[in-house]
Image (cartoon, rainbow, N blue to C red; front, top):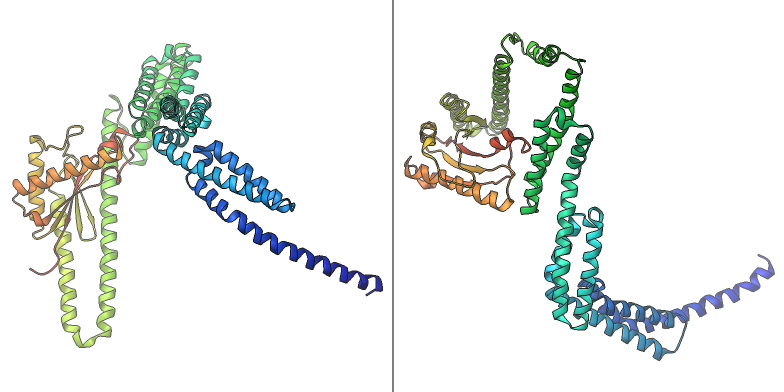
Length: 488
C-alpha cells in the first residue's frame, strides 16, 4: 500500500462516521415529524381518498413532499413541523370527505365499478369520459359540503356509467355479429338467402333486447349472439351456393348429390346402407339410432368398468386385511362374501330397472352401487315447478323402480339450463326437486326420512348450453338411488 493511499484512509473514515452521525438524528427527526402523518395517509389510502377526496388528498401529498425535502436539506425545523402538520390535517380531511362520499355517492360508485368491470374505458370510451367528468363534479361538491348538487351530479354520472356499461356489454357480445351482418349486406346476401339472413337479424335483435332488459344475465344473449353469428355465416355460404346455381355454375342435381355424399360416407363408417332413394329421412333415422345405440353401449361399458374397479379394490383391501388377521378370518371372509353378493344383487337390480324405461322417458345410469334415474320425459312449464298430469305414468314407473331397492336412500336432484339468473335458477331447481319429493310422499307413500330434495341450478350441466337440445338435457330431474347393502 502506498503512503498516499494510507494518508487518505483516515479522511474517508471520518466522512463515513460523520455521515452516520448525521443520518441517525435525521431518522429520529423523521420518526418524530412523520409518524402521525404516515398514519393519517394510510387511513386516507384505506378509504380510497385519492379518488373520493382528491382536493385535500392532493394538498396533503404536496405538503408531505415539501416536508420531506425540507428535512433532507436541513431546512428550518419549524417549517418541517408545520408542513407535516398541514399534510396530516389534509389527509384527515380527505379521509372524512371520502367516507362521506361513500355514503352520499354509493349509487354512482357502484355503477362506476360495474362499468369498469364491463371494460367501458376501452369499449365505450366517450361515454365513460363524460361519466368520469360528472363523477368528478359530484366529488367536488361533496368536498365543499354541497350535498344537494352532489346528489344531482350523482344521478347524472350514474346514468352515464350505466349507459357506458350497456354499450360496452353490447360491444363485447354483439360486435362480431354486427360485423358479419354488415358483410352480408355488402355481399347482397339478402337477395339469395333471405330466410337465413332474416333469422340471423332476428337473433341479433333478440340478443340486444335481452341485454337491455337484464344486462347482468349474459348467458342467453351470448348464446343468441353465437347463434346469430352462425346463421350470418350460414347465410353468406348459402348465398354463394344459390348464386352458383342461378349463374348455371352448378345444377340443382349436382348440389343435392354433393350434399348426399358426406351422408353416404358417414353411413359407410357405421356399416349402414346409404338409402337415399326417397330423400334423407331414412338414413337420418338409421344414423340417429346407430349413434344412440353406440352411446348406450359406451355408457354401459364404462359403468361396468367403474364397478369392476371398485369391486377389485374392495376385494384386494379385504384380502390384504384378512391375510394380516388370520384369527378372525372366517367371520371377515363371510362378511366379504355377503358384500360381494349384495353388489351382484345391485347389478341385477340395475339391469331390471334399466328395462323399465324407454329412451324418451328416462336414462338409467350406474355409478358404483348408486343408481341414477335421469327423467328426461319429466318436463315443467317455463318458470314453474308443478308436476303435470301427463307425467303421472312416468312417475308410476319411477315408483316401481324404487320398489326394486327396498330401504334405499333417495336423493331428488333438480337441475336447470344456464338461461336466467343464477339465484332464480337455483331457486327454481330446488322448487322442482321439492315438488317431486312431495309427490313421492303423497302418491307413492314413501317415508320422508328416505327422501332428500336438492336443487343445483345451472351448476351441473350434462350437455352444451349453447344448443337447444343441450339446454333441454340440462333441464332435468335426477333420482339418485343409494341401495342399502347391509343384510336385512
